[in-house]
Amino acid sequence: MPETDEQPAQWNRVYGDHLDNMGMQLLGTYVPRIEEATEKLRGPYTTVIEPRSSLRLDDRFLGTWRGASLAQGAMGAAVDALQTLKFVAIENGVMPMTALYPLLRAVLESAALAIYLLSPPSRDERLRRSYLVAADDARLRSVYETERGSTSATEKLEEVRAEIRELIGARGTPGEPPAFRFARVEYSDLVAKASAVLDADTAVRIESEMSLLALWQLLSGLSHAKQWAMIEVLERSEAVVNEADASAHVRLTTSPAVIAVFLERALQAIECALRLWGRRSHAWTAEPEDVSEPASVPQVEQRREREERRAAGASDDGEASPTAGDAF
Image (cartoon, rainbow, N blue to C red):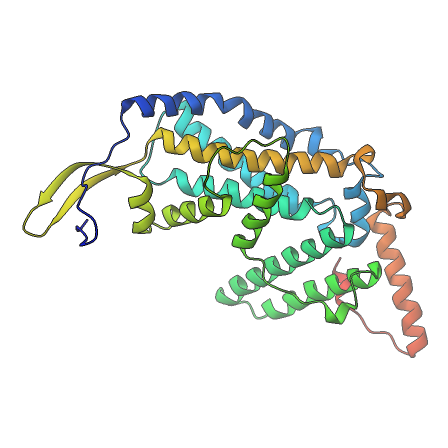
């Protein structure tokens, strides 16, 4: 670690035993919140979606992605990372140099994705976001399959996009299906939108001056071993200084106090996502627009209706042609 011209070298920087002990005590207080989030995700809180709830009424226009599966998968990843962090850092008291930061980043990103999908009160906006996420997933899968030598990766991507356009056509209100723009979904945008939702959530008390986006940027830097992020956060000790070179070899470690601060914000995000799920999955918290929404139709019946419409369209045109919608 070289000395810079702008700032005198501070080779050693430790937060001290007092903060380390406080950090471990704080981490222990977060265990019930981790367990509560896990229980909600794995129990009836998320598995039961009431018939006249916003989520169930969304299903008619979600096809393959019905049951709010995109949001459920995101929350599942967040809770899995929380359980791993609990096992390593809290139950066993292990503080790796940087290995916990990717876990915290995964909680934050996954929770932000769920918030992005669940927070809009408007069905059309929820559907639009689901379509964007589903299409971006398909794009990334296409990139992966191309790299492993698949010759049908592009075809599969177009099948997903065709399915989404058909769903848009069935809904009618988002606009003309051919005009739908499959924009990329950036995590910086997800986190920024989640930050706005958290700021407006009366159940959340945010005492940190650091924005959620700044926190995510720092976690990303630590996850990718960026030197600026490690200098910003990690403790430095046992410096072996080379005076002639104005540099030193130092031992880098993570303080439990830093993990406690990051974990608090990550928990706030996944708890917010779960509250949104509860609001969207119950009939008594449905949005006003849901009153006039047609009842949910089982997927098998929807498929039958689509086939009948296609058959009628083929009779009008004089010929039948399969569509990508046959895949779901």
